[in-house]
Length: 180
Image 1: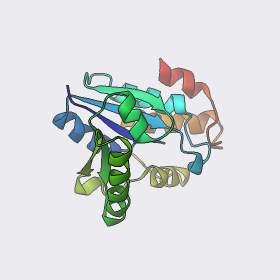
Image 2: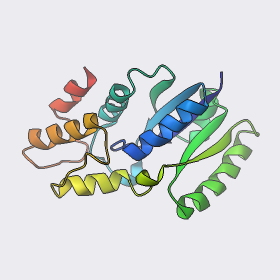
Image 3: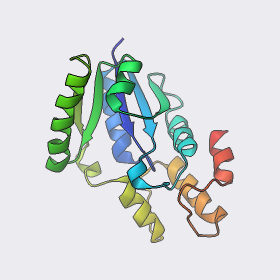
Image 4: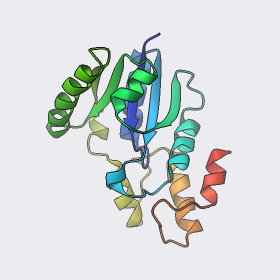
């Protein structure tokens, strides 16, 4: 069985992320999605648990998708779960320049056991990022073209439950509802 790892903060998971996951799911036996807390991005919109629950809900019928939380280097997580490769989604040359350097480092650290596979998001997902989705949402604009309905509903509920005040990383009733 060929397992691959796809890491990210997924705050929130976007249709761009999902496009990469779907491509990987068609190419490999198992895709392990590692939801990570990015300390550079602060507390985040959703808690780590909420992000995991949302992704699990979206992929609940996909037997070859597994969602975990993790910390540390992606290459270490890949090694721990016996993944042959780390999946990276590319949106443009800036992503490529960064990923080519990381690919070499990860291969070296893993003694050649973990490769990097770069997948390109379909054209209509090239410009989507989680931070862009959060920004558009904070302006009261529609986000349905950028995220799954499950995510849009969760974001809307979180905004309503906090009376329109989005407190990054705050736990609300959404935590319990999403995990159901």
